[in-house]
Image (cartoon, rainbow, N blue to C red):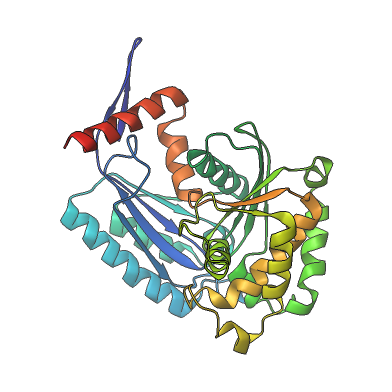
Length: 330
C-alpha cells in the first residue's frame, strides 16, 4: 500500500496487502483488502509448526518443524500468486533471532517469496505488539503483554505512548520443552526475571492488555464457562480478583484434566497451565485492576508502524469511516 501525502490532504492508494508471521510455535498469514481502511483481514490462516521446539537444548531449528514450515509457506506462496498479491511483508521473532542454523531456512523462504524476512529484535517485537493493541482500543493506558511460543514481550503504554519495553526468554513452547525449568519451579524462575525489570514495579498499572493465542484461548475458556452473553473476546475484561482465582485453578491442571477442557483448540490446551503461571506472576508484580484481551497485536502493529507512522489518528479514523459508509451504500 502506498501512502500519498500533500499539504492539505492525505490519500491512500488501495492495494491488497499480506503479512506472514514466522513464530516459534506457529506461522500465520493474513491478507487485507485495504489496510488503511480496515484492519480486519479477509484471509487469516495459521499452522502450528513448532520451529522452536527444543530450542533451549539444541540451539537449532526443529527438523520436522522446519520441513512442515516450508510446506506451509509454499502453500501460502501459491495463494499469493493465484491472488496476484505482491505487496507482502514477512516478520519473524524469537526462533529466528536465537537459533544458530537459520541461514538455509531464511535463504529458502526469501527465495520463495522474493522478499526479505524482517527478523525483529525483542524490543521491536514489544513495540509492534503495543502498536497493535493501540489499533483495537480508543486509548491504551497500562501494560501490554504478548506471550508467544518463544518469548514474552512487555511494553508500558501511557496514554497511547510506549514508554518502556522488554523481551523475556519464556514462551509457552519453550517452557514446555525446557530441559532445566520445570513446571514446579516455573513461578520462581519467572518471578526472578520480572523483578529484574525495575520499571514494572515502579508504577501501578490500571490495565493489563494480553496478546497471544494461548491467552486468547484462556479468555475464551473463561467467557464460555461463565456463560457470557456476547461471544467476542476482543476487549473482554476480567477483574483482577476474579481472574486470579481462575488462573490458579487452570495452572494446576495435569494432562488428563487438560483433555477435558472444552471450547478451545486442542493445540493450545497443553500450554494453558504455563500461560496461567506466567500471567499470575505478572499480575503479582504489576497488580493491575483490569485484565483485557486484545486480538490485535504484533502483526497489526508491524503494519501500523510502516503505514501510519506520520499519519494523524483522525485521518486514519476518517478513512475507516469512509470505508464503512461505502460498504453500507453498496
